[in-house]
Length: 308
Ligand SMILES: Nc1nc2c(ncn2[C@@H]2O[C@H](COP(=O)(O)OP(=O)(O)OP(=O)(O)O)[C@@H](O)[C@H]2O)c(=O)[nH]1
Ligand SMILES: [Mg+2]
View (cartoon, rainbow, N blue to C red):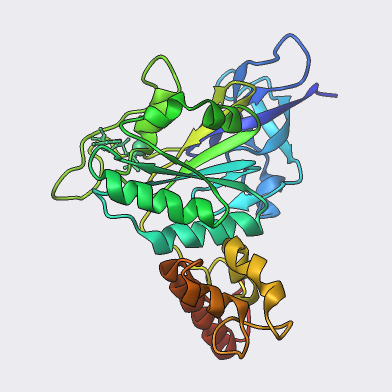
């Protein structure tokens, strides 16, 4: 019987995968090229970066190994397409491009649903220090770990280094915000291409196009291409799940008169009271309400989660 090895998928291009061997054997740590067995495709499970897999040798020098089995995933993210993330660093610029806080809040809802620890980095502090600090205040008061960065400076922060040194960490956010710049700053050599934001395309000239697992400390980091939109409905998020991305609102709910208070127009709502006192950020609350109402309306129209 062929020798079965375990590994982790680090790269995937055109139906071929690079797998880093993790079994303790003479190949441990080596990166080998693998195909995927037809049977895996029939189960509609396509190997994804971050997957733990079993591989066996084929005897074919061009494609020396084949992926026989994908281990059960802890989670899988559609955007960026990666599995088994432990941490997600959500990177948004304070300026150029303007921070899309709806997208940030959607990512926070999604990470909470998938049990991925979110960390927020606001970049380009050199361009807009005041709004960078304001954003840091809003999101740290909401309960998140937030860092600000000036051309990769957050990579010198010991707390951030520790957060990304274990498990699998993905860096995600819009194009041109400085994800690759930040990742490069964690390393001595430039490992990711970065580029100035082109005026015409409004995105980095060396915009990241592929996803790859790179060793960092005892774990891995993944740079990902930027994206601009994301539909909570298409990702199967229910209106009842929106509050997961708003820990500051969830925490206040105990003080509401009704157990099932939605914090929209109920009487004696602790969230509404906090909003009037100025202890809940109005922008965050508006986005909570908007997502809730939108998903509630879609659910009533379509009757639940769309088919995957
Ligand atoms: N002023 C300033 N510019 C920055 C900062 N961080 C990155 N940049 C610049 O922003 C541009 C885009 O940076 P990238 O690191 O390529 O951005 P990205 O998020 O990886 O972009 P995509 O790969 O397209 O998703 C480059 O010209 C960087 O030099 C920063 O903190 N301040
Ligand atoms: Mg990039």
